[in-house]
Length: 132
Image (cartoon, rainbow, N blue to C red; front, side, top):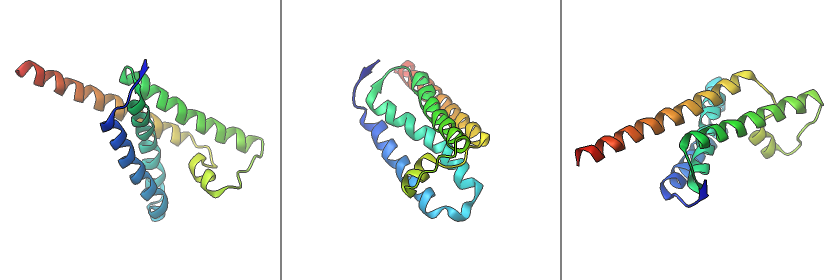
């Protein structure tokens, strides 16, 4: 693994951040769709942040993004268990306040979307190279 700057991944991460911000601020009426889609997109967003800065196998980055999301969920669980409350509203939105195993399912779906997306793009890239 080495560091580098991937402009396309960085631009995708910025775009996904915008979508996540819109979901968080304007998507209140969407209910569970907002939270579930936000969790799926959050893992994909973290993946592209990692991909913009690190050069390694995509599956490693995908699992690292899942691990980070799972760590946040575990933190939420411990905060509820030990009665810790975050008073900063922005931090409470980012970290969340309620642990839910459905979030882990959303994180896993986001991870699988990334892995299958990378596999599909790799297959398409190899097919274009064979045609030449």
